[in-house]
Length: 132
Ligand code: THU
Picture (cartoon, rainbow, N blue to C red):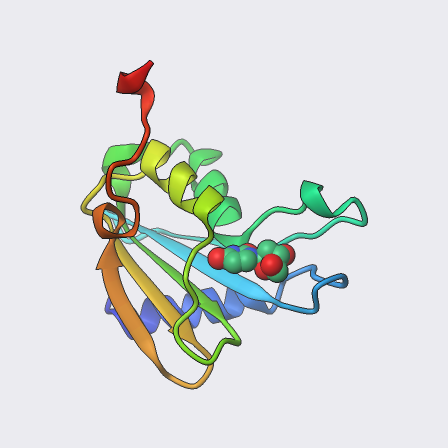
């Protein structure tokens, strides 16, 4: 599966976003080594901080199917931004806990712009369990 196909999956997830408060829909798709795809969209709440981002929902969706760090190959995220959407800090921290550091991260917008990176590039000098 190439980046564009994974972005299309993230767009499909985005269509399931529940974002009545921000009006900002985000979709994410996680790809595992055996070719499985797990979707996530942002799900908001009237108590704003309780809301959950698309990326974390996609990762947690995969975990609930028994997937672990070694299974993950790539994650795509898409939003209606001028430049490719950039995952928030909380999502980067969760990615660093649950995904391999060389996981392929694809950031995209709805105008066909995308940028690929890795988790290590997104969150250098991460705090992790080995620091405890
Ligand atoms: N959001 C995501 O789902 N992922 C991101 O990477 C950035 C922000 C959501 C959270 C909230 O529901 C809305 O976008 C506005 O911040």
